[in-house]
Length: 258
Image 1: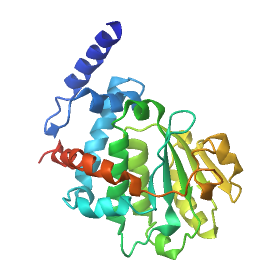
Image 2: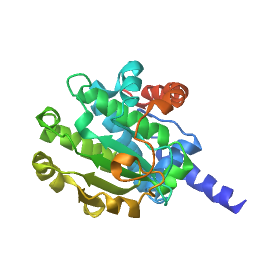
Image 3: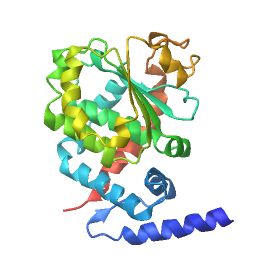
Image 4: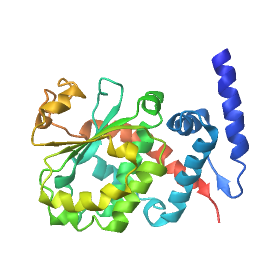
């Protein structure tokens, strides 16, 4: 009863802040708790994050104001990016990004951004994700100029802003695998833009994948990352995608109104 009472106080205070003009936002507990947990129940910081979340959506309508869910689903089902079926030993969702497999000619940057956002929106609905956060693996094998030409300063800033300041996630680790010379061009642009906290959580593994097992148990780590699980693929998420599409698309109706 005490826990429920405390939650009602925080919920009431948060809604008081949410009386901002022109902002239309979901007010259910699951949605609001994701922001509160991301800022350790500091209500003012949580509401600032909520403001950033919707302001970012408004600023980048060219990315988000799209009813084309089919291309997003098609991209998610490719073995390029997505989540492992099991969490790591600390309860984190493990997200995989096989950067070298991304073909920007067929899947443009805006589509990739929408697909990543859809995966995050779906996974952040679960209390365990809100509490435990994310661990991300960036597999840089095969990185070429095809992807690098999209890593412009403006696109890099877009990605970093959305990650650090505009989404209610707790990031526990970024694991970079098989970095090549091309990657260092990207890193030179990205590094100064990262917060000190995130910089401390970035781990470079090069071609030695053994250290990943200290964070992700071999039984759930795909074989291509030195684990024992089956090769990473996303077709198993097809039914979940069908079920969550309406909910994800429904968020497009919220935000700052003109």
